[in-house]
Length: 251
Ligand code: NAD
Image (cartoon, rainbow, N blue to C red; front, side, top):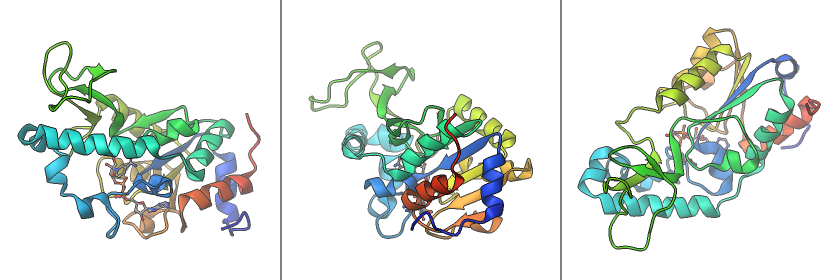
């Protein structure tokens, strides 16, 4: 896709005039960095792994070492991945928009590594660990032993600082995301299947409050019919082309 991609002039005007833009990202924006999405039929993580075995509190209670090792494996994948052109375009948009917030369901930290600053992480970050009992974040832990490392304060097992199935989202991040969705003029839903709630409700909140909703995704999702504009294609191609067409001055 080139900068000649036929973006609707109405969309371009709306984004140029927007006082507050929110981007909601999902696993799809990191697909071009080589990280598997969850739901895609062929390559998706959950096509290869049963989430009940790895990403629930009860799986951790039954098999803590297995869960710990699976996350250690994913943490290594994330550490060796690089942000792609889609991540960099969003960091650029943040520098050029009047106001901007990035709400992500991703746990990979690639937005921050691309230079995004106002990032609301709804599902935690795989690069961090916390005490499974007290919730305190722990900066350094020893990966070399046979067992799951323990909290230096209370001795409970450490766990990845991510939100598992059956768990609540961090209240502060969720409130910030909901507030941003209600106040924005435009919401870009990028690389998300819009199936996981409450994140999946954010585009509808934005729309109900009068914002335009734009989907960027190579595939149809349950959001497609309710978006004002649908840009079909990979985020790593669409977003840089969109930024180039917008030609927003750096602020
Ligand atoms: P999902 O796997 O449900 O959906 C991914 C979406 O991305 C699909 O609609 C797919 O069509 C689209 N997609 C694929 N390639 C794309 C590309 N190049 N550009 C744009 N879109 C593309 O992901 P989701 O909606 O984020 O699902 C929610 C859960 O997945 C979240 O809880 C999130 O924490 C978790 N997750 C995160 C990561 C990560 O941090 N990288 C990876 C896998 C899953």
